[in-house]
Image 1 (tube, helix red, strand yellow):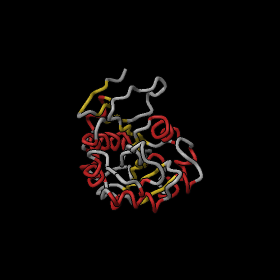
Image 2 (image 1 turned 90 degrees about the horizontal axis):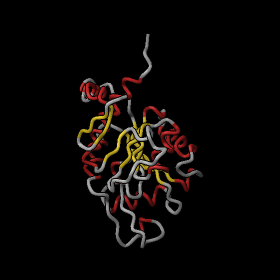
Image 3 (image 1 turned 90 degrees about the vertical axis):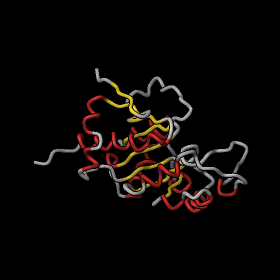
Image 4 (image 1 turned 120 degrees about the vertical axis):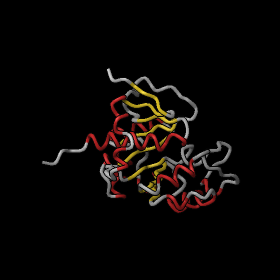
Length: 206
């Protein structure tokens, strides 16, 4: 049985501890892209409002996300991938701009334009095609286990479940979240862990 160790709210196999930091220090990251869900992952959803978020009378960023995006954008291409049916990329960027987050995202994709929604594998495959990335080179970060995490894992992405409300892991969810973080303070540790695991899983070149 693999021992599980918790470090700053992130849980992972004990053997991964020996590799944390080493991959980054040597510049050998296998991860190129981080894909973020939108609602309640990057910006708060207010149920009392309807229509495009860009037009809502009130918008807010999720606590801690600005610092997390600023740090991550220095190492990775950041993509926002949303199931929004009433907002295309331009409206999503307008909403992001209202909270000062638009500049961090190299790509914005929505279900309205892709013709498929999470957790449909076609959605994630279309996102990967948009950025020219293989599944094992990308990490999905989202708050909804079924649509964001289980859907992305089915296609082969690494996954980080953003779980600020401490929801229980679904009965069928074991192994689908590569990391679980209660706040964005733990995101960088989770990314380090996944970088280490991705490096260890890379094909050996003879």
